[in-house]
Amino acid sequence: MGNKKTSWLYIFILTLVPFSALHAQDSSFTMEITTRFIQRLTWTAGEHVLHYEVIIERTDENINSNVLQEFTAETFMEISLPPGDYRFRIVPYDLLNRPGASSAWVSFMIRPAFAPEIESFSPQVFTLRRNISEYVLNITGKNISQGAEIFLRRPGTAQTIHPAHTAIAQDGSTVTLIFSAEQMEHGIFLLHVINTSGLETSFGDLVVEPSSRREFAADVDAPIGMPAAQTHFHSLDILLGLNWTPLFEIPQFDEHYFDGATLRFGIISSNNSMFNIGFELSAAYYLFGLMLFENNFLLRTCFLDQRLFVLFRLGTGITLPAAGQSMPNLLDTKIVYANAGISVCWFFFGNFYIEAGANYSYKFAVENHFSLLRPMIGVGVRL
Image 1 (cartoon, helix red, strand yellow):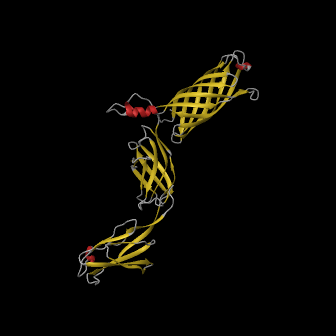
Image 2 (cartoon, helix red, strand yellow):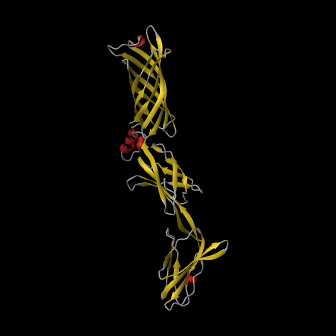
Image 3 (cartoon, one colour):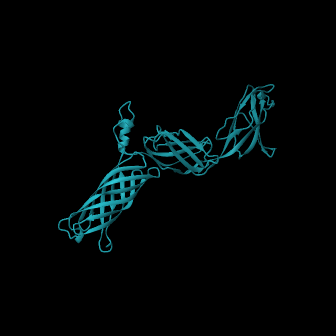
């Protein structure tokens, strides 16, 4: 975030001097004002001018008071004045040091210029998808001037992405940027703001990512002349996760509790609809030697711009006791079970996510029917 800085910028000229008013009887000259950050008054002189007298007055409540009266042989003068309303005129002197006709008074205003500040923006991640035509970025901050240049810049390079549309609030506290889908490229970008005063700031990082490697490959590998949406690629997310999954037998929670871990591999559709389907294979190992192998049907629903997912699981599995290990009586043989579960996945950075939830497993045994509850928490990555 940029620090707040105050500079004085000469930005408004309320009265323009007609060219005819700049002609003297014995010598002619023209005058112009260039708006620069260093508050420079400039003019173009005619012939036979020795030097110029510059007179500047401040206007407060219709009362004018002199603040500067100096001579210069140059055709410009650099000044440093506080904010306020001013007027000035130029008096040319000929080679015999005689004053000529002065120019008309020119009114101008000096206003304070502050460096822009960015406090936050949302979303922090754009996921590129074929059926999204534009991406909206909302910014909150301070001192963002009307007409400021705002764009994305890739760090360490000269690459920039300028929005198709920019809307800045009158008080400079909020900005809405709209980017078209054709403009966006995946990568990490800084948000850059340059005020009309020339003061600027940068803030980041904004992550722009493809929805999945397969979808990105479809966009890249589409035959020439055929849109990517017409190829035979499908939008798929490949998920790889590792969970801590303790096991509780219901209802004997205190008697039968075992620590274990589960490795999960899932493939799920990613077409930006409300619900996506897929399947998952998992393998769990528990400290007393029990192994569980499981396959689940997956149903996923998305929230928060594809950053938060709720996963529903429904499937079957089998318990495989390890040879030579001491097992609880109910788990000492191969048993098929049905499984149902729910979990929440939050993509906290790029393709990395945190997952938390629980699974309920109903075991079909010849002599006994019993149930297991397996809470889960872990991390994963979208490949």
